[in-house]
Length: 109
Ligand code: HEM
Image 1 (cartoon, protein in one colour):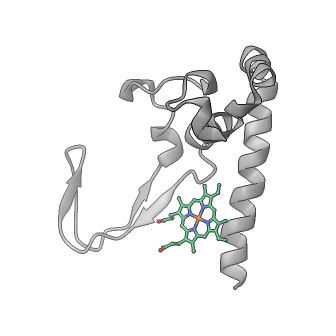
Image 2 (cartoon, protein in one colour):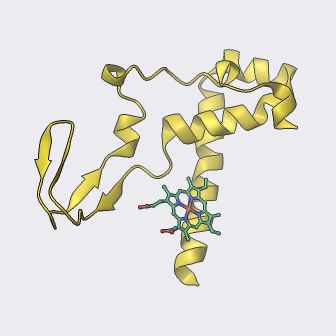
Image 3 (cartoon, rainbow, N blue to C red):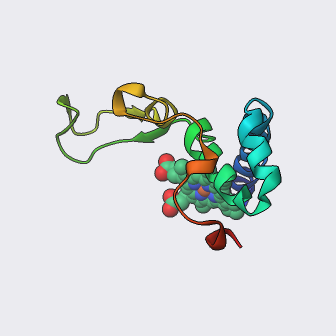
């Protein structure tokens, strides 16, 4: 139960704080959100994507594999840096842009 509370509470608190920080540092996007509060859902989802409240995951492959051409042996611990991947320009990642997130304001209601 403590693990479940930790998984839910920390992620929720930090993702809300990251969304507020992103809005505070992007005045144009904040103004758009004030003009159309229905976009709040997209602002939050963008913060989840770009700020990555969970920045890394861990996996232990059950068979030999490879990631991006790098061989991974069975049983070898792997740390996946999701936070970096979500911000990697080399992967064509766009900057924080809640106003251009996919979906329509109607979906946010
Ligand atoms: C913004 C909110 C949240 C984010 C970003 C988030 C993110 C994640 C991520 C990335 C994983 C996968 C971890 C992994 O596979 O290594 C995960 C798993 C999990 N999360 Fe969340 N989480 C959020 C909210 C919550 C809440 C509210 C709860 C419960 C009240 C919760 C409970 C769990 C549980 C039980 C797992 C393990 C699922 C499994 O392995 O089958 N999470 N979460």
